[in-house]
Length: 280
Ligand code: 2AM
Ligand code: CA
Image 1 (cartoon, helix red, strand yellow):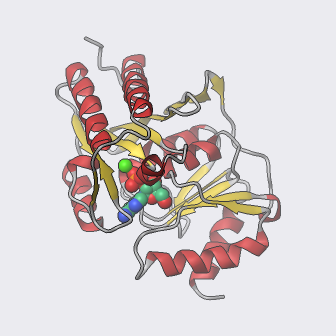
Image 2 (cartoon, helix red, strand yellow):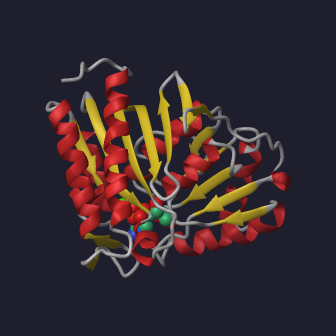
Image 3 (spheres, helix red, strand yellow):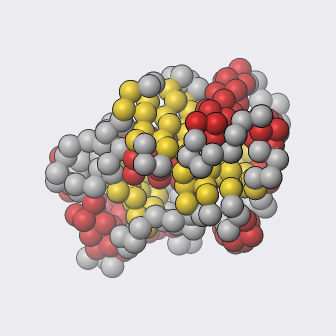
């Protein structure tokens, strides 16, 4: 059995192993899933592949670290209240694994090749290991707190843009039609003329990994859950970037409305998001 050392290799090795195994299996199921259910709404999907991948990861983690706590998307009832409650019940755990077996399930269901496995380990509420794996490109993004972040074994760094005008941003279109969708549209409308361009590819974890690796200048989305963000937040921070909520407060596990960037444009970015919200 691996030795449980804080930030030690064994945690990261297990996280990588879980992400790689689950990702390989998910890839074999692309176009072959047999059950599709709606969770909270017609936009909130789950397949047997999400559930199977989560079980695979939970069992593997449990074999190595039976005393650790586990928070996975498919173990939680749908909807924001249940997610917040589930996080509150475990966030003080000594060691907590936070797992999204497929981030970008809509893409997986439609065969759009942009989804990922997201696995984070938090120690007393602080993320110490983050792994995001894109099985379609076989790209593994790994970060350890204080030790940097890597993709395909190469050290990652955020991009160099210093103004919004030179920035390539991404956002996620939220499902909630009452609050999140109209606000996201306002933000999009306000930001589009101020930036180089905007993408929306449908996996928050992978968008965060792209900010970390310098492929995107920044990313924002309203209404995410801890499992969408925990691993990606460490990737961005360990690559020299900044992760906050939409008011510019530092990231923590409870953040649902996120703004992540290379840091250099963060002030301008958050300012523009706030001005959009204020209708200015
Ligand atoms: P998921 O695929 O794990 O559900 C896309 O905009 C991002 O939002 C993805 O990371 C996706 O994660 C997440 N997402 C999709 N539907 C959602 C919903 N109903 N509530 C919250 N997050 C959602
Ligand atoms: Ca998911």
